Length: 268
Image 1: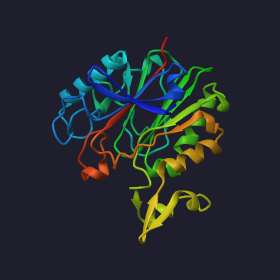
Image 2: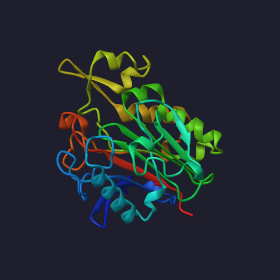
Image 3: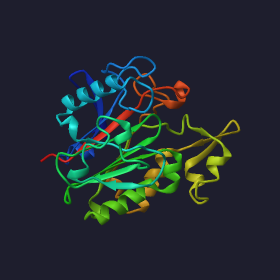
Image 4: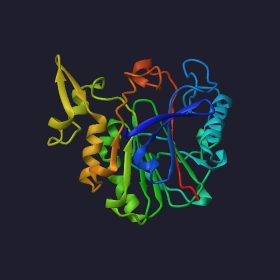
């Protein structure tokens, strides 16, 4: 059985992870087709912060909500700036960022929730989105991490926050979204020097004099180290840079592109 699969509903293509699907949690990771955004955001751009006309983004979000079956006004997002800050979303806080970037949680890269029907949404275009769900505690978590967030331990920080919310680490199911993978992620010494020395041999490789970084590999190792069972962890095999025809890729586009979205919600 595949650990991930691409589905299509109402013209919207999105990826799901089998460990989350079989646990019954609503989730998805969007591809780039099925929306209304013009180039270079074509067409299902989900980010309000990239220069795409807001009306197009809101229509794209409406289409995704219709495809997955959640209320668009319950979407809750953050202004991601490569931190490890986490917000626990309550009913009073739900809907932040659904209609405008300015209303999203500032300086936040992790969201968690234990309430039904609230929809967590994060964005990326080469960075990793980390999906978490404890089916016994009925707690979801969604986080964004590029190399800075990964090196700072965004994954373990989320696991700790979920434990504080009543989860048990051995019950948490986790999935790492499509992102730029070591086949394409060339980095400089400035990045390599920030990685824990003991981890470097596992996540850095040298090819033709250039360093390549395994961003999802680092995060998978961190999550296992934080108590997530390898059997409960899925790592997408898609590289966004290699597959920029179906995913937005910041690097492949030269920096001007749209954003995919990850969404999660506890079904009541």
